[in-house]
Amino acid sequence: MRCTPFHLVELTSVFVEYALASTLMIRVLHFSDVHVDIPLCAMPLRDLLVPKRMLGAANLELRRRKHFKQAREKLAELARFADREQIDLAVCTGDYTALGTEPELIAARAAIDAVIKRPLGFVTVPGNHDIYAEHAAHARFERVFGELLKTDLPELAVDGPFPIVRLFGDDLAVVAINSVRPNPQPWRSSGRIPNAQLAALRAALADPRVASRLVLVMTHYAPCRADGTPDKKLHGLDNAEALLEVCANAPRAAILHGHVHGRYHVLGPAGQKLFGAGSATQEHREGIWVFELDGDGSTATPGTWNGVSYALDRAASVVF
Ligand SMILES: [Fe+2]
Ligand SMILES: [Fe+2]
Image (cartoon, rainbow, N blue to C red; front, side, top):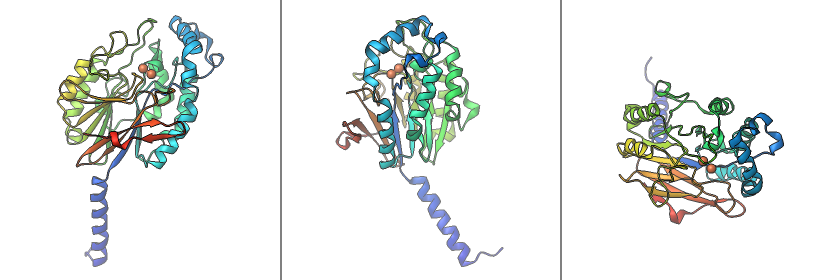
């Protein structure tokens, strides 16, 4: 076929569209720890008879529930905020529920539905409240959130679907690591990244399909607290140092996490960039991040709840 002027015009416009698509900014919403709850009478009795959950249920009724009573309304508003801010991709670092029962997971999945309908989709990991006390809870989470746990590099998955690796445009990759485990002991809420996932993360960061991009590594547990010190032994990530060491070899990586209810940004010991979203819905502590990513430079802007909606604090943006 001969190339006519019409074909040349068409080819040129395709090329321009491709060039624009490869350099356009991607806007990412990071939220976490929404802790959507349901009445105890809606939870299976056999689940409530687990000792850890008996104590958790008492704590939920006496203390916790009041702090998250507007969780659903705030999530509905977060969806409107994401529409207004033209968010391309949403990510959530877990703790959807209070006690990790299946009816809670289903309720939370419904409550986030409008937030996660973004042009580039949604990436997530479970939190310790979603796995809570039983090994079977991993399968339960994957049953309810399964269609949200797709990966673009299935050959790197070593632990169910994890690590999930998603590639967006030419400049962004998201790697989701599952760091939660059942904690049947009432006094423990700590986590650990399995060695196989750490090795897969190392392989993913070195993979040519990922290495040239800005990489958002996301997991539930905080590698360190807002002041840079390790989290408490019974609450934190057992092998936080190993995660930080793996990410130290990826200068274009940032680590996104939840678990500690309070939004913050801190640098790790080797300059690793850490962003904790805190809780998007806990009364008086609401926090989120919005990342604006392009090939030339990226910013992270904190957001909070102003009593009516979520609002960004542009004066506090972090360039990274
Ligand atoms: Fe939480
Ligand atoms: Fe947590």
